[in-house]
Length: 286
Image (cartoon, rainbow, N blue to C red; front, side, top):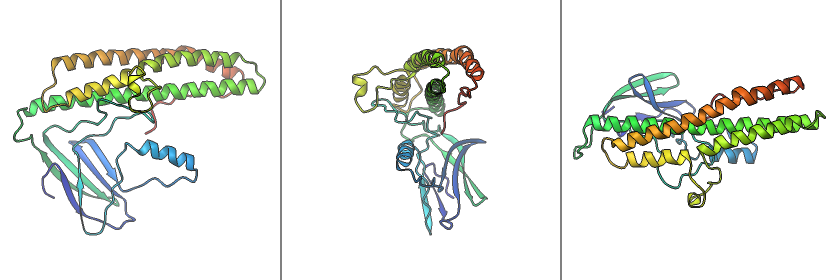
């Protein structure tokens, strides 16, 4: 295989064989593609919901008989986002890798083929390899913080839904409305934390003109600024990243405090009532 950053060729196996294409920086997986497609669901609403979730994800490989060419955009794994997230401005694209030595691995039904890749700076560019690496590292950190922001949002929504369901179930089972009121109170506190991370009113383009963008939008705005040119990030971008990180850590600490106190107490009351307790998800589903 030729050492080019933008493509790789292979002869396709049979359509029924599993094909995986992986890009690495040393032992670190940067991006993975496969020809495996999820089976269609019989439930039309569930299938539509999954199609919406898959909209921003990588399309499956489609190997055909003969020589194939795959175009890698040199970007790493996308951020983890809550379903139906809308960003009117900024960029949610993951960063491109910096100039350097990488590798590509092709796996066909367990048989592996590996090839080195060399990515070089643009010959007409002014940025040094060190500048581009610094840019990549900051953009990668922004991607990680954006993922953490939305992972926390999804965890909050999951806990709140469980609280509502348990409170309703308790009332239906004739155990009074105390648990329902407790669940509502905790849900209000959780919503206050979620509102620091994202604005659920933003569901379409231009909604950020009517509703205040929150921390997740700040991340994509910053990413767009840092990625606007092949250059070392400005000191102001580095400082703003630190400011946003502090806001994220504060919100995540508040969420953890609610789990450790309010939700723990709620679960104790739920167990005493003989109802299964809230079980917070550890990570947002991919």
